[in-house]
Length: 178
Image 1 (cartoon, rainbow, N blue to C red):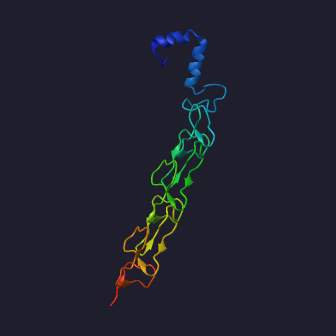
Image 2: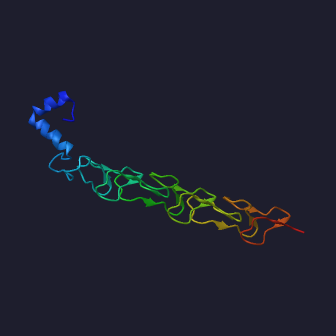
Image 3: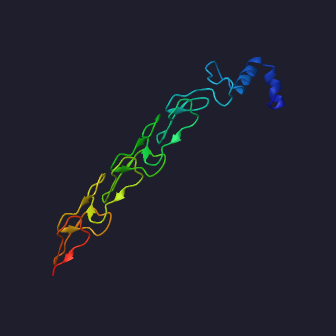
């Protein structure tokens, strides 16, 4: 009766079609309907997949942690999912980061920066007096005596220029000789 009048007239004269439509309206799609009294859902998908009337694997960059979910959830910044059908997201490892939601892979920290813990959304610049000369580092290294770094984010330390010296580690400036 909720159909267009001309469609309802055709359907009411064909009991098979009318039964299918009535069953669909009530949520009964077939004998496998897990929610016979809910017209919006007929399947209960497994963990890692979602859907109301058919199941779809969660796309890479998202996850489905419980069975019966109608939608997938994007991985939060700091996490990623590199395969379809994930039940959870993976924390970015130390030395790596994930800056956006829905990521399918982490990114290594660039030289001059590091990440000392899992799940980071950004890398930390090496502080002045230290350096990071590799990608994917988990810590900065202090400049050795004879060298210094006067800026954050250094990939190398600077040798003390002629006429100056550095007699400590982690120096941010060279001292002029007297």
